[in-house]
Amino acid sequence: MVRCPRCGGVLEYEGKGKVTASISGSIMGDEYTESYFLCEACQTYTVQIWRERFCGEDSVRVDGPLPKAEGDAKVELINRCPEPWNKRCRCDAHREYFGSFLD
Figure (cartoon, rainbow, N blue to C red):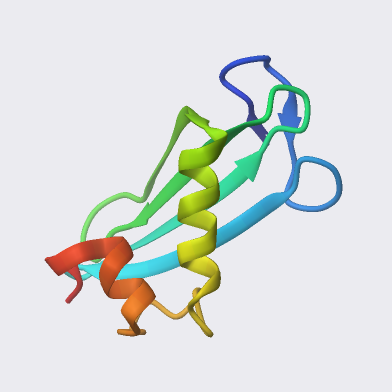
């Protein structure tokens, strides 16, 4: 369960407050998955960042709140990718999102 850092509302993977967009990328052998949740109550985004390590323990952190305009731009970028879940994708959207850090 993810909570909005601004209002404390519960953000779910399905239904109201669900994941708006998600993207995965491989960086130095680790898989990063960043999921954007839009809080309906305060109109800000929360980002959940999963790091699945090649060696070592996995981790998860939550960032936010992100202003709606900034989050909308990230969601729009992610939605340009035909396979945002594919950590090996090297489309323009993946390269722009992750920069030069992709494996």
